[in-house]
Length: 291
Length: 310
Image (cartoon, rainbow over all chains, first blue to last red; front, side):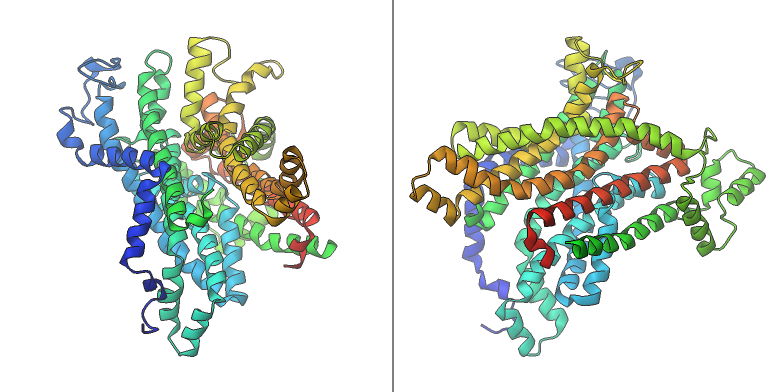
């Protein structure tokens, strides 16, 4: 095998099949995957699965409890809640996916560079990371939304940036370990260009923990975005988003509890599914860690 | 040890400066003209000019930052754009309520989370372990704002045994804090149970545990003396570090329960574009978080001397 080939390529196709086999056998995945598939399907097929419009207002139908006609009832503007949850699945998964992508795309390279070069570069990047980490939890996303303003794009940016430090820390930690391994030293001795080493031999070997973290992070991102929506600082009011639905449903908690109950249940189930899947993936990649 | 403490404190200084720059920049980077954004759409040109001058936006950036820092050092966080009242007293007043909520949640979550984790680990693979795993996973996946609403629905609306929100008058009525504290604690219970379980399990796999068993120590002694003490080290750190997340979690919980804390003040201020309050609240949250992390780091180095030499 040539050294320029990725050292991660040592894992052939049968290794990938083995991971998937272990994943599908894992108890957490058996529960998490079906939940996730369910939400992906209702999100993808939302316009075909429902006869109702998720946005059109019909006040004569407002706040109807669950019935045969509206299985999850209607909201304060007479819109079918089941339909809005289906369309909301698109929104939440979309926000989660792109937010995690932003976090990964910025965090992983910064973390790898920080860990690989060490010294002053590492010091400067780590202090910058400390600054981001000084706004814990939803706070960084709140700061960003307060500055950028509300809306779908800004929510994605805000949630994405607030996940950047997680990836920096993770990628750096992995790189610090990989950097010392003899095969990386060998690539240096062979005179490979640094970008090649960093991508093929460092990045591709940090991919397992990055995938696990991204799965868990999808849950966190969806939770944070829903939190912003609940606070009235999320996407545009016309977009059916679970957190926003829950936030408005709160006003009618006493008389029509179904308005807040079902969107919240949807958020909980999707986040649970990603957490289950993340746990299962961790064990599937490295069965020795399974506890 | 003293050297380590000093080094940690020195390292915190650039972070604190960075935080002040971000908080300062928040208002500078409002899209468009910050003065116009703050004044609102209906404002006249003169009103916009007044605000521009008040915020010092007509001066060079470095000068603005310098005067921002100078005000901070004198503990002057400005006045609310809405009520005209000074920001700091409002923050201090609401922070007390937030602090009480966070501490009560901690007091609930830490023992419950750790005990669940230990029971789960010791009975690994049994039914009780499975139940504990599912329970803690529910805790970490549950949106706090939804859990809060469901608790209100059950205990305040249906059973009518606990108040739905507020803090109670005149002094603290303990019934008011039960639901928000439980809501806030749920996530931490889940995190701690998961953390404790894996920590105890990894310790139970160590050689010295086998040695303890081999020399005939009872199961009880092995579990509670040898394993637990060592397993608690990472758990302690996580608990400390988690205090900051608990504080940020109060933002959502306080909004659900109309708890008059700093988080609710912050959310209202963001909606009202009351930037001096937003800046002040964000700054205080981060400073508390940085301080708590610093204390945890130092305590950790005290407990585990190896850390100091890294």
